[in-house]
Image 1 (cartoon, rainbow, N blue to C red):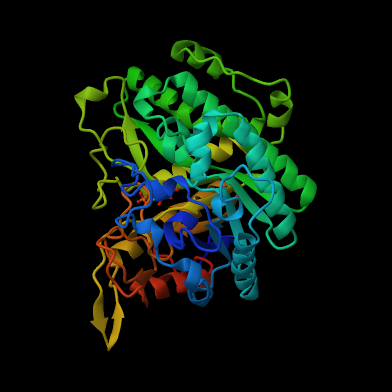
Image 2: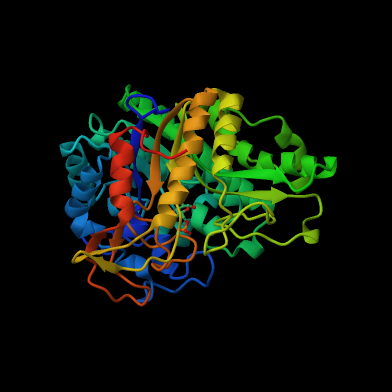
Length: 470
Ligand code: BG6
């Protein structure tokens, strides 16, 4: 069997604390913004934790992590991407002293991974700003959050050094522009925010991200720290030069964040962009120097591509997680209307790599689908051939990107075990190789069952991609 993947390729899966841990108020954990978002980004927030919020229990990873990591090990995972819930370590976010029980929990998770030779890949902030910081400071609009984040980073770097080599700063950092609450813990409704407000918040996150890189390298000289962006390809809807320019401008939305992380300064095109948007970033004298702490690699999520045009109103609107554009007539879509485009993954890998020549890490990719639990030979399972096809096709294209010359460190499939979705906060939409018996109404045993894709992925990893079908 021929493989396009290099030896040591980091195969694995990805999860986030707020979407799987549950135990939202156990062992001293404080609330996070997710505890007041029972509807994800699509509905109203609540005053406090409400029973309908599926994230309060999640899939109970907090109590079942040993069983889950054992299953990941059985699939042969080389890495597991998970996030640390900031509010487990600093329940309010602005304290000086961390919560020992929170730190202990991640000691256990990390040790459990290492027991099986699974490299932890840790996200420092995955849409889970402590609620107190959102309420008291309006999240990342306030510069003080940089200091609080720095304190949190120092604590976790000191605690887990020697055990965790791979770190990511902010999950999908570019989302702050589109979803200020989720991306930056900003409680002021989006409609009341100016572009100045959101880009200033983005600036604070970018400085905090660069500071995290600096501190990580000081405390852990061997550590590799990456930025993490939502990766979306913007095809021009037609070859009309107007659409081409529209596509170039949309790309700058994405490149803005990676350019700063990789090149260590604001790109020249922001001058014009900020003028048009009426944005004037307030910089402190030290910011320029801090931003020079550039990342070791670029990581991104990739689920779909989209089309863009000068006049979007002429076309049918597409759907997607954070940004959606217009529909591509050549592509099929998932049950949630996300357009499926495996070749887009090859395209975006080349796009990033040719621009920066930095190693890439695909840290999210997968198909959210409705699964049906059935019985085969007395065992409960899901016959998820649709998921196998989606993943196979994307991995084949990733292999082609490697052949094109792109350096890829690894691939972690999103929601390798079913978890609560971020945008719609539901459980009906499943991504996993492992089915979790918990339903949208909160019912279910929380038992785990291997889907057909479980053995499929195990074989992909065993053969280092040799079993993929071209
Ligand atoms: C990414 C997020 O946007 O997409 C994840 O980083 C999220 O947290 C994933 O779960 C899939 O989106 P959704 O809305 O289907 O959960």
